[in-house]
Image 1 (cartoon, rainbow, N blue to C red):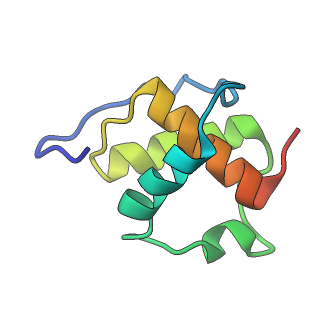
Image 2: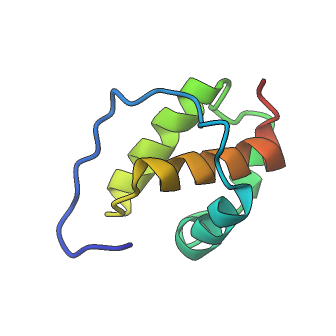
Length: 91
């Protein structure tokens, strides 16, 4: 998943997670890559910035670029599905 050179991900990709996304696969990706910078408390604190699926997608896209991860659309949808089911509960 990690690359030596930064991968620029399009920030305009604000679509909500696909209905067929795999939450279990998203958890594996999250546990492998995301907890290196922060733990799950970033999603549960009262002042979290993510207030919608579109904002979740935007935040994940930004974090992925910052961590030099090249997530496929399916991988991103899986992580979004996991985060939404586990923490956000957006409709």
